[in-house]
Length: 224
Ligand code: DC
Image 1 (cartoon, rainbow, N blue to C red):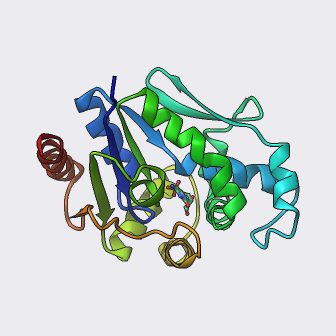
Image 2 (cartoon, helix red, strand yellow; image 1 turned 45 degrees about the vertical axis):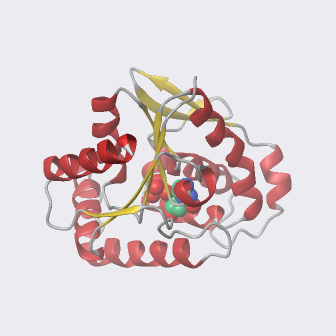
């Protein structure tokens, strides 16, 4: 059976994961959050005492790393060498480490086939930075999801606050701008809209309104 893939790319905090989750359950597709894979690799490096300068032999480090995705109650869990690290990868430090490791060609190559294999097996919505441009260039529908930097930072700030973080809004905004810069300016697979993507801006929109917008784009894209 030929599967259908929907690619959603965009900067941090644009709402990719919450919207992709909502839309995938409406469509009965699986949702794959590829950022979690880069986060798990970033965590493996952090645990070895390496910081965002990545002063180490990346290829050698990767030989000791195994990353897996499993679906438990329809929710993606990411495993690092057999350990479920789904919660541990959600800290601001893990975000910056993920952004740093993701600029390395060896890391991107390490994760590429795994992402493509999922799309071969399942109808899926896959979100990330380079899904429409590199990982799944033949995706049936490609969406570039965005929102203003202030609004994206405010959403992240609220999420972190709920988890008990004492980071200020200014710190969250500065981290987000730094990460956007890294992700958009790296030499390999930079964050950018695929030429055949539809740009969806969620600034000022509620989750419900954004879901309606995405469902319209997807329905139209699947019919074409
Ligand atoms: O989507 P996220 O915030 O969980 O992603 C964490 C980092 O991983 C992000 O700053 C850039 C990187 N990433 C990537 O380079 N390519 C992807 N497909 C997904 C994430």
